[in-house]
Image (cartoon, rainbow, N blue to C red; front, side, top):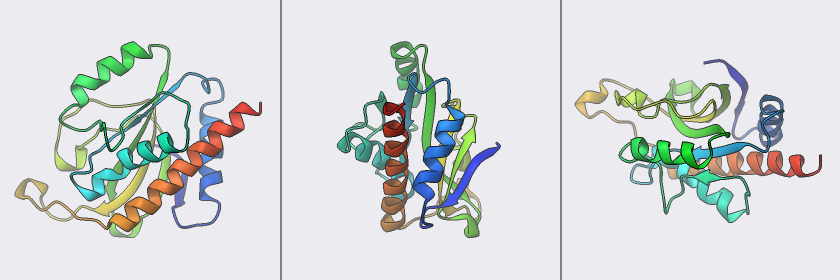
Length: 180
């Protein structure tokens, strides 16, 4: 998948870079976007999406949004929730937000990509694609065979800080639209 933005969450200006990438990618779709934050707080590295969703809700984000800590969109309910999201917002582009695993030196990288995400892919789950545009945060590295239970762990502080950056970038993007 081609990244249209790539930055490390701790770098200055990454929120603005994220906002700019969204503005450029969504020029004709700004008012027809639904955000789907994927993941669960049952597993720290996978909490990035619902944490972003919760932060956006608390910040007054006005776009349709699915996936918060209280009401997550995750592997066990995704197949049920996607048709409901599509039928509630038939003309909307889905912007998927999800955690991702990468190489050890990629941890902390945020990417905006054309195309959706396949939740659970790194853990050999077969779930449908979510979104036509996606934001992923690389929260850990995959080591060994996940089928043998070697699932990576992560630090809550990293996930929380990445979620703050993503939420701030999305709020900047949304506010820039209202000034047009």
